[in-house]
Amino acid sequence: MTKKTLIKCGWLVSMDPATGESENTDILIEDDIISAIGPQLEAPADEVIDAGDMIVMPGLVEAHIHTWQTGLRGVGAEWVSVDYHKNMHGNMATRFNAHDVYLGNLFGALAQIDMGVTTILDWSHSLRDLEMAESAIDGLEEAKIRAVFAHGTAKPPSTPEGVPFGRIPHPRERVEALRKNRLTSDDQLVTLAMAILGPEFSSWDVTLKDFTLARDLGLLSSAHVWHGYNRSMPEEEVKDGYAKLSKLGLLGPDHNVVHGNYVQDDQLKMMLDDGVSITSTVLVETHGHGAEPLLCKVRDRGLMPSIGIDTALIVSDDMFCEMRAALTFARYREHFNARESGNYPIAEIPVKTREALEWATIGGARALQLEDKIGSLAVGKKADLVMLGANGLNLFPVHDPLLSVVELANSANVSSVMINGEFQKRDGKLVYPEDKFRNLKTKFQESLTRIMKDSQFVPGAK
Image 1 (cartoon, rainbow, N blue to C red):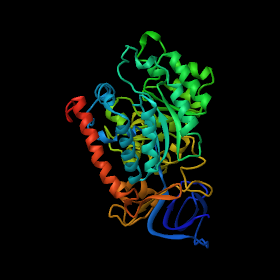
Image 2: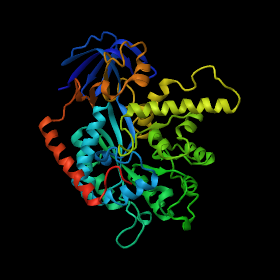
Image 3: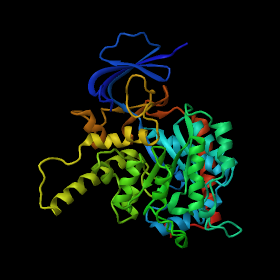
């Protein structure tokens, strides 16, 4: 029997051009699908929710997060890039077992739900075997978050045999096993993607094999990119890896580039012309790099970037913080360029607030190839939504709900979160069982204490 839920919204920020923003609007949900939006809907419902003092908005889409690192939140807040690779991948990551990854993903996913995120791309790059991959998926599924699980590989300095990780292709057997047995359908709440090394961190032979595997299996691939050419194996001169991939027809909307701060303009144009999506993590990128986030150059070309927090190891994993940081940087960059060109001060705000919410919703949905399902509140789309308590003193009174969401709100305002038509947070509390949460919280702390001890890492030290 179809379950019908009617939400009577105080304010609606839909991010759908046809629906727009409005007051006193109702949303009818049938099972997991939005079936109607309009004022004073006359429809029988199993449950009527009074959200008259709420701003109802699409769930945020976190387009790049290393969820497995959640338990190490803040320990790398004063690290630079070399510290991260030495301490994380060269040491602590090697101490993680399958249960550690499960706990990190579970608590990381629950934290994202608690902060208003309904969908994540989980860039899981600590996996050494199928058991670890299965455990990572267990954590996501148990949290009941919508997730694109991007299967990645561990990145120690080298294998016991001395082979650099950049010379090891993505494990075909492991990915095929996940695709055939666990994540077979793209309609599941958790779906499969590949977090690959890409041209910057692998040999050309490995790059070609990994891109081909993703295409063969019909999977989204995502790669970390900084310069766009290989730095880890300079003797191989893989400086034109993306150009080669483009010529072979292996670039398209099914490939996602993360970061790309140092990518040259002609290379970016090639990527965008091929339909590649770009994800910027502004807080992390401005923390550790001297080149501007790529989202500005993407929007210069009339296209929409996506954003993510990257890792709680270094910055806050609150997407409201990331959204505002991205917007603030984009505005600063426009002011700076105007001053440099002698056209300052400018007459109006250079980047509209709406854009930032687009990056955090529909932009992320596009990057994850889920735009037909999520990213906006529209009839026919999945019921993934967030209710913000508008009586919070940082929001009250609401004059413009969209401005309130982006410029003023924070995760403390998140009252309820619905994913796939089911509440995963309600009236300020996660619906995850409290007794189990307390028990696993203890185990999570024990896991992290062991990892720190085994790695001989002291928080605050480099």
